Image 1 (cartoon, rainbow, N blue to C red):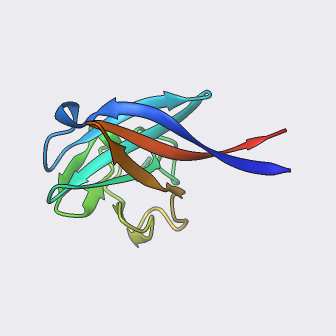
Image 2 (cartoon, rainbow, N blue to C red):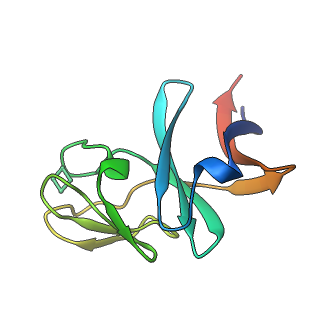
Image 3 (cartoon, protein in one colour):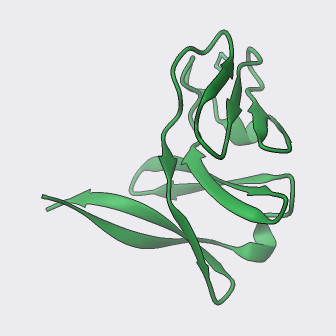
Length: 108
Ligand code: FES
């Protein structure tokens, strides 16, 4: 059965507004984003050809992949432009005592 656990991912001060931070969670590359002071987490792997999205530029809530320019909404994972056609996974986030936690599903 799948259960959720909160993984301490990164300190708040390490993710400035308008930027993303890559973390490795159980071997998966996850991006933590700061959009106007709110934190979001997505996969850090572009759904087109698996480029790290944190190497791209974030404008407000839109990340542009540095390789071919696909855009995604980091608050929903929705794909906004070609050449990507699939969304990216998103994960729940919470902040406690200055640490950003990412909600993770683990298998028993
Ligand atoms: S690898 Fe991201 S748009 Fe192609």
